Each structure stands twice: as structure tokens, then as C-alpha cells.
Image (cartoon, rainbow, N blue to C red; front, side, top):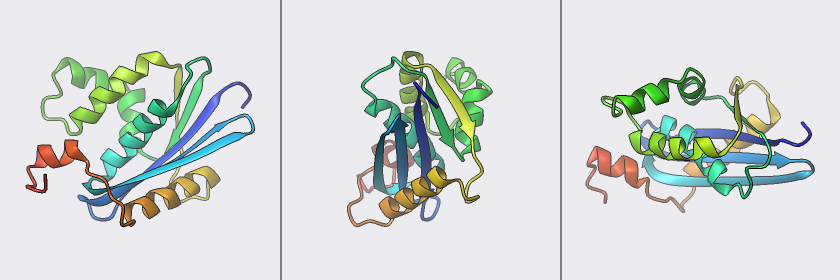
Length: 158
């Protein structure tokens, strides 16, 4: 795609909850960037959503349309079916990952976003790369703290 930014994301959790990570592949023209990050205790859905948020936070322009590809129906449907805005109106009552959804909602108006669901583990090259990055991040020895998750869960790890 010419004159658009392509973002591919995936999340992983080794146990749910458990150590987790996300992987991102960002493309613009001939330029490509990969990013990953791991956390000591989190969930798969948090990593899927956090990958999208982190990718948007890395952008230094909103000049181009952005196409985001994810194998997470949780993320794609929550946005495309506008569920997240209904959750926000109801104060996220009973909904998980409120902290991350609020971050996403702050970023959303700044960009022209189109979301695409891709089937995971089906040979899509960028999705497979993101999966490898996410698993490597989740299984690394350099794991960060998903403070939003650990505070909400009261794990006592913080």
C-alpha cells in the first residue's frame, strides 16, 4: 500500500495470566521497524491490545492513513463494532483492561485507522513474525511490570 502506514501486531501469554509479550512490525514504503516487549505477569488480551497502543505511541506523524492487522478478535471487534465506546459511556463497569482501553481511546482520534483481522498461525508472514517476537519477549529474562494488571489483580508482586 502506497502512502499508508501498515502495522502488524500480536500478543502472547505463557499461561493466562502468566509472563507475556507483544510483537510489532511497522511498515511505511521501504522502511520497516520491529518492536517487542515482555512482562512478568499479564494476559494474552492485554498483550494484544498493548501492541496496538504501543505501535500508535511510536508514530511521529498522523499524516498518513494507518492500517492495523491483528489476529485478536477481542481487539478488532471491540473497536470495529464500537463496543469500547459503549463501555466508556458506562464507565467500563465489569469490563477488563479498562486502563489500556482508556489509553487507546486517547490515541484513536489522532489517526485515520482501519483495522484488519488476520487468521493467526495461518502463514501470514508479518503475523508470524509478530508471533515470534511476542513469544521471544514473553520468554525473555528481561521482563517488565504490567503495572495496570498487577495493581488491578492485587498480586502482591508490586
